[in-house]
Length: 495
Image (cartoon, rainbow, N blue to C red; front, side, top):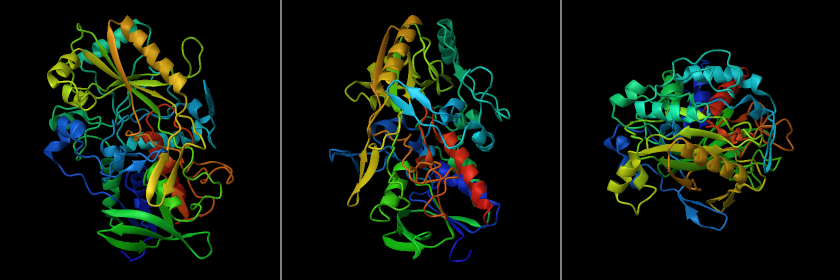
């Protein structure tokens, strides 16, 4: 490879890996800069105590909240980024999410294009990530131009019983679209995959499905342990001339004709803010703003007659209240099963309780994740205080989320679950972070155009969850993949 690549991609998570995959066959000289390293096979990868109680894989990095209090973010730095630990739910935004949605306490704005523009790229992303799913059950499912590549992951017996109970009270559970080869995963250990790291053992993550296939091409390479610090504009101020990064205590620079920023919604914003006095690519003043992270609550329901002997559990979800509730209320959100919450997992959330007691509970509980949209707000933002990253998360749409929680508690009680515990997720879980460098059709209001290209710097693209206009109320991974594949096609036309 020549010294100066044609394209530098910053980050190898969902956005960066999919761009690399989309451009690999063009023959362009591509360099990927990744802060982390490849996740090796390790006994800790399937050790719930190491993951949930000891925080074995968590970064020692610290961010700060609005009060100056430090906290540990839920970010991971490996080849494949946060997808190495994700729940592998690869769900499309609903078509209505692109149109603008009225909520109880605000409005989710429309996108610069509608669902049909992104649909072909959703289809390609589902094929790339070998998604397991089924169509025709979920009434909110948008139009598909094709079918899922594989059939849905089957329910285990206890989960099939839970699905039947929910149907009996009028709900419509549907199989989650999942990026998991269940047989390959279970061959490596009888554990869930949700929040468990994958060393290329069955989870369809960004490394397995996009990065490794891209690296097969001689024109694509990756440098690990490369933490990007800032982008350096050219003399004309219209282009990005170089990328500055730290690697093994040395400060290095690399130039390229095209720069793709995909370091994660918070880290990408930090890089742009650190690159100029008022932030690079920031004519709109929106870089770092509109931070969203979903309202998430864990809901654990207990019924002594229910015997939960499942291993992975996470196979179906509910969208009955996604667009509106049965009483004609505003949208409330999405519900899906957690990966199996065993006693060692639960101990990470309830350290005061002995594991034997938690084990008794877990064998008679159903574990659900409630997810409601977090609305974009100018004052919910990322800023810098010197070298410190400050996250001012202004949460929104809480009333709808609380209604969803209460509604699900009532419905679970009607199915025989006599007791429920709920716990909202806090600032330490930023795995659905998005919106800080959003796309739009007006450079006065948005840093990026509809192709994820900077209005201010035509050779700069941002393809991670930063570019999302709204958070919707489903897992963002597939939408990021679709947008990144679409951006790669746009970049490829200019090569």
